[in-house]
Length: 293
Image 1 (cartoon, rainbow, N blue to C red):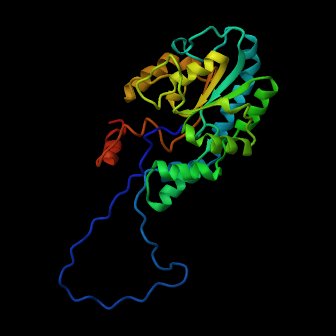
Image 2: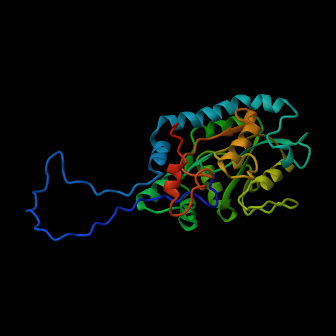
Image 3: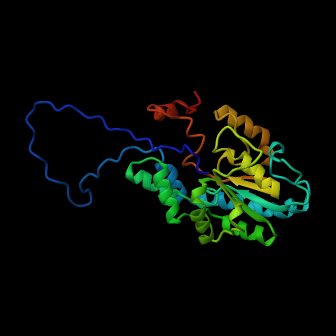
């Protein structure tokens, strides 16, 4: 999921030292051979390990494929049980009985991997902004998250429609659909993309980035068998974005995960990280660490 406020890559500035009067020693000869000259020191970046893990660690691939394989194994059961529904009751505005089956998927970091965009931010010492994000989406270079294409093929073979509920803005719809098709993901029609800015009559929400109204819209047409996302808000409305609020909401719906809801790994950004803001955000993160003392 790409929230409205995404992480800003924090950097530590190196302290400048005042020069003192002294006689400089003769310059040492430049090192040669295997040692070589020292590389320039890059500023610290909180997202470096996270992005590198997504791009290089087999564990990331295993977790993603594991989630989609587990979901595929549940499809027949979900289709068979008439009362099976992955929407919470308050987001189900009509009876699901008799509706066509569908699964709801977030786009970013759930079906499309945007780690190259995050890597560029690290390389260039920048943070997320709408302009660079729009340019990245227009490139249509995001690859499929591991496991999602095989799951999509299994679902569509059983007559299940894929509905993409994304916080990509509606003006990015055509580029997004083209990217989805390019990596082999089925797109039943333009109406299966419910981006940020989608108007849902009869439903209101405090924040435009929340997805509860769009989930309700999907539920008006489909019996939602499963939901997939990388943030808690991809599954249910988050009214309290504190750590305690997230924990309570998870506890309430813990039994849904691995059955009707499937969470994908995303350590690079999210609501959990945007709690730490301002000039002292890196220190706030350090202060939040549990060191078991």
